[in-house]
Length: 240
Image 1 (cartoon, rainbow, N blue to C red):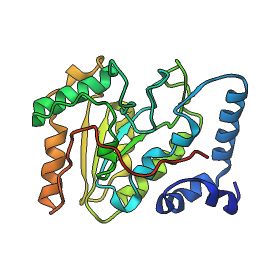
Image 2: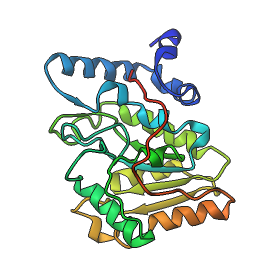
Image 3: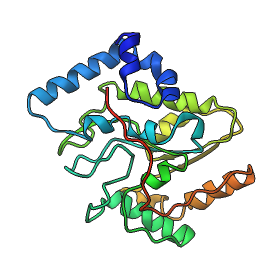
Image 4: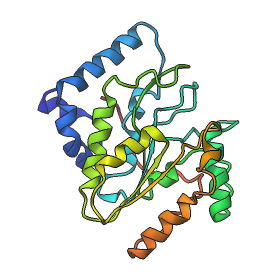
C-alpha cells in the first residue's frame, strides 16, 4: 500500500496515522489479497468490508477510555457488525457469549439489556475490538493467523502508551496474551475467563467488570459508561 492509498483507507484519521506502520507493511497487503481471493472463490466473509474498521471509526483514538477485546467476529450470517460481541439490533436469539455478558451486567449493575447492538458503548469511548477483524461464514477462527493480529497488537500498544488512564478488559486466554503490551501504571487491566458458555462459570460470572470499570473512571474524574444499549450514532466505516 502506498502513502496515497493509505489516505484512502476510510478510518478515523488519528487511528489511520497511528496504525500506518502496519497498514503500509507487506503482510497487510498480503492479507488483503487473500481476502479478495477468498471472495472471488465464493467465500462469504463477515462482517462486510465497510465494517472491518468500524471499531476504530466509532471510537476515535483520543476518545478511548475502555478497551474490550474479543477474539474474532461472529461467523453466523447477519450477526457481525464490526464491534466485538455486538450484533445487529434485530438479531434474535442473541449469541450465547453476549447473553452471558448481559447476565453479568444485570448481576453487577442491575441493567437489563435486550438489544445486542453495542454501538452506544462504542460511542462513549469503549473500543470494542476483535483480535481478528474478519471470519469466513460458518467457520469460527478461520482467519486467525492471517495477519490481522499484527494490526490489533499494534493498536493495543498504541493505547498502552497513552498517558491518560484507560481500562483494558481481556476476556479469555487469547485476549489475555495482549495484556503483555500494557505496562503503564496509569491503566487498569481486567482479566477473566471468556464469557462463552464453555468458560463463563470458571470466573467470568461474578467478576463485576462493569462496576470496576466505572469505579476506575470516576476515581480519575471521568464520566462512567452508560452500559445500556439501543442508542446508535456516529460515522460508519469502510474497509481496506
